[in-house]
Amino acid sequence: MATAERHRAAQLARLASLIASSPHNLVSRGERAAIASVHVPEALAVGAVLDAAPGQRWLDLGTGGGLPGLVLAIACPRTDWVLLDSTAKKTRAVREFAGALGLENVETVTARAELAAHDPDHRGRYDGVVARAVAPLPTLVELARGFVRAGGTLAAIKGPAWQDEVAAAAAALRILRWTTPTATHVTSAARPTWLVTMQAQGAPPRGFPRRVGVPRHEPLRRG
Ligand code: SAH
Image 1 (cartoon, rainbow, N blue to C red):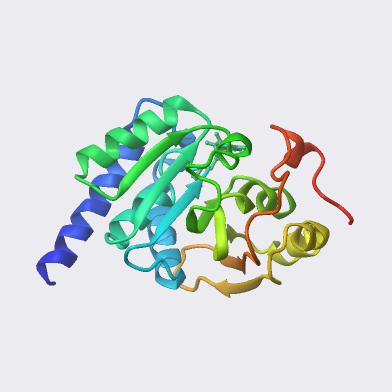
Image 2: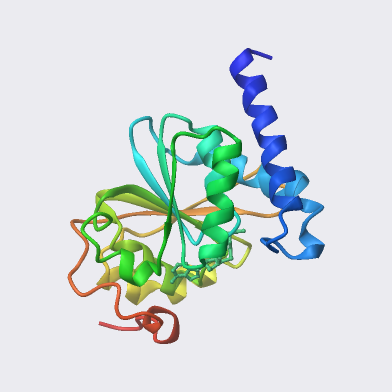
């Protein structure tokens, strides 16, 4: 193994143990054993199909304990990763992990996506957004849209029901000006996983996302 690769493998192993041993309940007790065997490899497999290029800036929306963002930051070290979550306890832990791993391409933001997406520091400022286990697609496409520049990407990590979610999101996709999603089967993942990807057509539409909680409780249905 080349030196850089060995370094990366060591960082990934260290990350898995940092997340698993954190006192902050970043993952449920039952999931702890699966971090190294399922969650890190899954994020790594996602990284292999994601086109996060060097010099780009990507957002992990709802990063929780740092998945997939920290894994992607290790896998794509020349891409800048902003890891956002509304829970300060989680972003604090993620910041500590990034520091312990010596990751210089990671920044954390503690905020609701509905608010951060209207902040000029974040609005339309990302080449891509990635998210896992944050919201059903009709909600996620609204939470993410404000962050993404014209031509940028949303890549949602989804399970076997991805087609139903895409169908349910039809109106939201049209209103928010996303292209028709395509799904890539993430074959090396330990469980059936798809990366559902779409592109932003033009700048983020004004007025979206709507107020805190509205994208989740009243997902866009027609228009
Ligand atoms: N992506 C991680 C965490 C999933 S749990 C993983 O796959 O392990 C969902 C996370 O999204 C939680 O940490 C929650 O705080 C965050 N979240 C949900 N809605 C959000 C919103 N509107 N703005 C910011 N963070 C949000």
